[in-house]
Image (cartoon, rainbow, N blue to C red; front, side, top):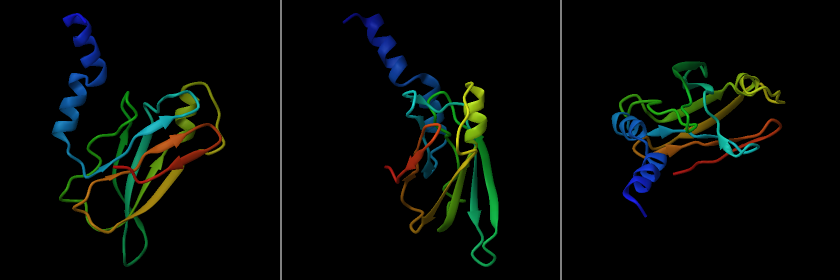
Length: 139
């Protein structure tokens, strides 16, 4: 295999901007949106991260972001801000589907999850089609 082809493959698998983004923001919480209907990453999707107040059960906005070309949103939260508690990620799915000329059944998806040990890494992917979604705790 030629050196040029190897460089192309390397750039496809780990582009320089992805290496920089991952190195500069070691978030203990990550997500990855996959458009399983089309077999592509869910890129340019707006999302928000919230933490629930233990005393009042009210949600406090921590950050907002947009998924990158790979469907990921690096730097969601710092290790210092990541504490035990209940969190919610809200994905703006109607806007996403509209941006690619489609409609959907779910205008947004909220994933609520509990963090017991903030020293661990948590990955919360969203597998998405126009009429369904699924999630799980990844690694």
